Amino acid sequence: MNRILGKNGPVVSAVGLGCMGMSGAYGQSDEKESIATIERALDLGHNFLDTADYYLAGHNEQLIGKAISGKREKAFLSVKTGQMVSVGGPGPVNGHPDYIRHAVQFSLQRLKTDYIDLYTIARVDTTIPIEETVGAMAELVDKGLIRYIGLSEASPTSIRKAAAAQNITALQIEYSLWSRDIETEVIPTIRELGIGLVGYSPLSRGFLSGEFKTPDDVKGNRLHMPRFQGENFYRNLELMGKIKAMADEKGCTPSQLAIAWVLAQGNDIITIPGTKRVKYLEENIAAENLNLSTEELQTINAVMPPGVVSGQRYPEKFMGTLNK
Image 1 (cartoon, helix red, strand yellow):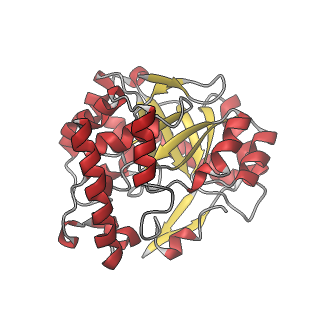
Image 2 (cartoon, rainbow, N blue to C red; image 1 turned 45 degrees about the horizontal axis):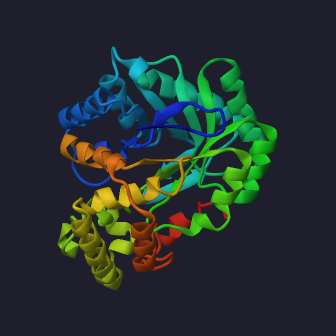
């Protein structure tokens, strides 16, 4: 299944592949299996590969560069930039034009390509006008280094300012059964402006897959996520039981139900579940063939209304980088 990303935008796979976990974000990963997963996605016609230049200091881009070697034309590369990292967590956001101009060159080298399809500023740099950031990105479009401009985790105000200055193709932001705060203002704004939505973490960092049974199952970056901690974990585990029951009744996995729900929210939405294994890639992709009836969607919304999840999606220090 393909969808048009934004008004008059590119045609991309409705279910893409988030590649962050291939660089150790959620525990140890295997390079051979990761590359096989990317290759399998492309073989199945799922071209949207999402990465960032700060995923393990460029390791993720290098990995993708190896995987797409000789088959660049099959891939739609989505690259985020601008989020600096520091010891112990996220660093400052850098959306300065000079940084953007330099960062893209390093990404191109690591990916071993001469262009990036969708180049996205990972967070809004509130120290400079967003018009300057997207202006620098527009220069890269003119030079043929990137094809489309994206925003991530941007507020309606920032989205409007950016779209008034340049052609914005997509907004990447978290969207799942457990992260629905964007439905009130963000989604109406981008629909008004003809901007597509790239929803990341449709499985709420794996919780909606049903793989976590006890806190001992939680590894990697998830250990710092509030939804996986303390009483939040046990409350959310109870919610997960309800999702599993609905999935069992539908004859699918909880992951597939969660992904299908996101896709059912509009044809202008694609989703990028992350995985580093072929098995789960194929399971996720199969969700695009899962049709949810109006009655089923109403049931899911009644059981999982907005705000039902316990805990924020990020630690407090990271929530501060989100553009409100």
